[in-house]
Length: 423
Ligand SMILES: [Fe+2]
Image (tube, rainbow, N blue to C red; front, side, top):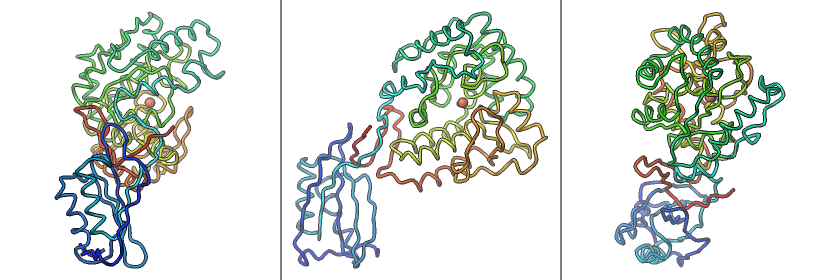
């Protein structure tokens, strides 16, 4: 469309169509559809009533139509019956070919406020405690009871409450210590700089060491002071949508139970060794925090297909990502950093070159992945900053009828149009 039009208000009688209410969340939004002729000055004239009546616009999106007209979707702050907005609409109806007040956009439910994570935190898959028959602890009744007890504390947790403190047993601490010691030389050799720097601090400030399991409460406070990321207890695996949504709030769902002692160097599910030795150090890094939150923001109200794509991007970055440092591939993904076998495989030099590909979110989104086996390939980023930039570009292609932004001060998600969360 040429820039700006004049509207011939006399060419057709204006119409105002009400198709729904404008309420939606704490911020009120109204979306208007303006159908304008493709003439210089048309948009400028059409927007004038908003300014003159003091109505704030949050988004304008244009879509061409056949016959030299354009549709403009204009999102504004306020309610349909607010006087300033009502007056602006009345004026528009006199000056614009057609004005339609649209209803709310239906989107899949997502939390708007950090406290709303309480609504999904208990929705663990398999009720959080049902172990599969191939789980190393499946036949160990004592282990299952202990895991369920720790899980119950997480289930009862609510936003703002004190983080549950776990009195780990000697046997659990022994398992942790074995994993810790075995990983130590590998992480020094293959961990990326950000990971090693944070790990060093966690050892000095948060009690990281082979002799005791750090408390999630202390690690969470450490991370929050650095990047605003916090850990939140969870009883088991969540749906990808719920898990990814939390990242938008800089919240990482983190388990507290310990893997079964019989197989200390393998776990079919996340446990405290994976969370604290793999994930936690990276959340102290600002660039990694940005990348993680980017995935979370893109997942809010996304379609099921796009959530699936994002889950794969998450897998090939936050879980199994590598990056180049001084000509060497280093690990930043938690699934690599917390696994002896995965660290050796990804960074040990035995894999053929074609097992490594440059980080590309579009390719990652198409790539299936094994959950309980070693990864067949790894994606290698130039840097975490560039990984995030590429991810942003990829997510811009998603269909979503609104734009979301996180307000760290209020811990709420701001959206630029009226939406109705369903489901
Ligand atoms: Fe993980």
